[in-house]
Amino acid sequence: SDLDKGTYPFYMIKEIDEQPAVLRRIIQEYQDEAGQLTVDQEILDAITASDRIYIIGAGTSMHAGLVGKNIIESLVGIPTEVHVASEFAYNIPVLSKNPFFIYLTQSGETADSRQVLVQTNKLGYKSLTITNVKGSTLSREADYTLLLNAGPEIAVASTKAYTGQIAVMAVLAEALRKDLGFEAKFDMKHELSIIANAIQVLIDEKDHVHALATDMFTDKRNAFYIGRGMDYEVSREAALKVKEISYIQAEGFAAGELKHGTISLIEDGTPVIGIITQANTAAHSRGNIEETRSRGAKTLVISMKGLDREGDDIVLPKVESLLSPLVSVIPTQLLAYYASLDRGLDVDKPRNLAKSVTVE
Ligand code: G6P
Image (cartoon, rainbow, N blue to C red; front, top):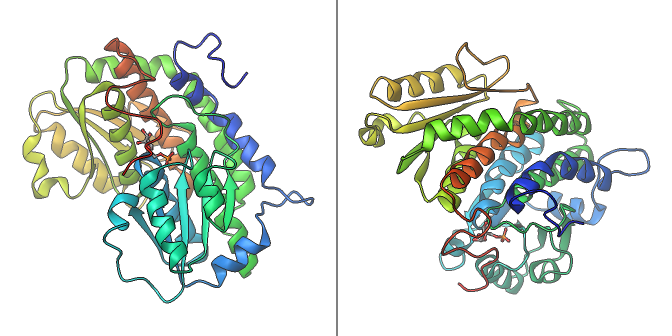
C-alpha cells in the first residue's frame, strides 16, 4: 500500500522512486475525453480575468513555485510573482489591480501559507490551492483546488510533491495557453510523458549517484549548488534538500553572482555542484564552475544531453528545456538522500523539522 515502506529502508527513497508514476498519474487525471490536458474552465476563466498571478508557498513548495512562474510566463505571458508565505503575510507588496493567488502546499495545512490566504480572502481575491491533500484547510478555504494525486508523502524532505506541483502547474499553463488561443511551442502531454521516462532512467542510475554523493560529501561541512535561471532555482531546492537531511550547510547560488562575493568561501575541497540544462547560459555556467574549481573546489557537473562535455558526472536525458527542473532535480534528491544515509542519519525524520508546520 501507499503507507507501506515495503522493502525500502526509508520513505524518502520510495517517494523518489514513485515520481515517474506520479507524473503519469497527473497526465492521466488532467485529460479530457479527447485526451487533451485540461483543468476546470472556471479556474481558467478566473486566471485569464486577472492581470497578475501571485504564487505563495513555503519551503520546497515555494521552490516549485519558482519553476512554475517560468512555465506560466513562458506559455501565457501572465506576469507571475513567487513569494515566501511568512514574508508576504506581514509585508504585503503593492498588488496589481486584479491579482490571482495560487497557494502551493503539499499538506494544505501550512500556517504561514494559510495566513496569506485568510488575508487575500478578506480582500476578496480569487485563489487556487494546488495540494496533495483533498479536503485540507487551504483546499477548503480557497476558491479552487487542483490535486497532485501523488499519494501520501511521508518523508519530511519533500520530493514527489515538488515534481508533482511543477507538473500540475505545467498542465495548468498548457490549459491556459489553449484557452487563450496561443500557439503551442511544444506538445506538453508528450513532453511530460518523455520526462516520466527520463526520470526513470535517472532513478535506475542511483548507485552511480550514491558513489558520487559519498565522494562529494564525506567529512564535508558545507557545499554549493550553482546554476543560472531555472538551474539556479533547482539549485536552491537541491541545497535545501541536503541541508534538511544531512545537516551539511548548503547554499543554492546564482552561478554568475558567485564572483561578486561568495566565491571567497571556496577552499580546497569545498563541494560545488553545477547544474547546466539551458543552452543560452550553458557556457557561462561552465565558466563559473571552472572558476570555483581553479580555486580548489571539488566540482560535480550535472548537464543535459546536448550541452554535456566529456567528464561531466551526471548527464540528464534531453527533455524540453522549459521543463528541465523535473529531471535535473532527481539526481540532487538522490545526492541528498545518500549524503544522509552515509552519515547514518534518520533520513525520514531529520532533527528539528516537521512534515507540516501548523504554527507561524
Ligand atoms: C515543512 C516541511 C517542508 C515543506 C514545507 C511546506 O517545513 O518540512 O518539507 O516544504 O513545510 O509544506 P507544504 O505542506 O505547505 O508544502
